Amino acid sequence: MDEMHFNRSDILLDLAMIFKFSMDSKNRFVLIMSGLPLCQSRLRLNQAQSLSQRIIVQYKFEPLGETEVKGYVDDRLRLAGAVTGIFTDQAIEAIGPHTGGWPRLINIQVSTALLYGAQLKRNRIDEDIIGVAAEETNL
Image (cartoon, rainbow, N blue to C red; front, side, top):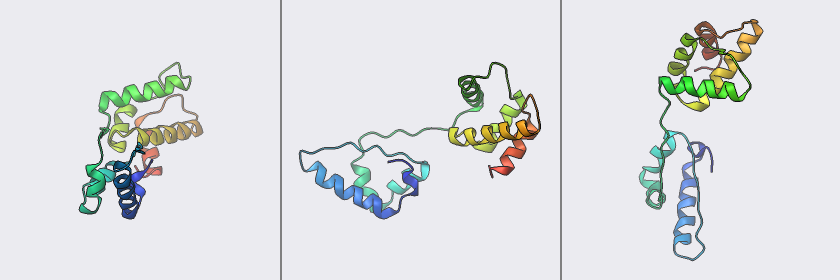
């Protein structure tokens, strides 16, 4: 289940009930939940405690660091067919603070900056374009 942080608390309670019955029978199933850090906080609440106790494996993604942001953006651009650097070093440095290093937000920021840069007919994206893209996307 994706975007679990958007689900209501009663969904977590329903999942806990399903797991309770599932654990007592031979029909076992695997549920993969994903969501932003808020999801983990909601699982710590008393009302979701029975579901939280049944989680066997957890993995928490950490935001990307400054050098990882550069590598991530470079890899995404390379996969899209870019053969030269499109973003200046200062632009790459400006992406991190606006996005907190979260890949989904980086994707939004970079896409918006590329669109804005294309409108301005720029060959390279600088930190000013990143700033405008951040304002447009509320990052």
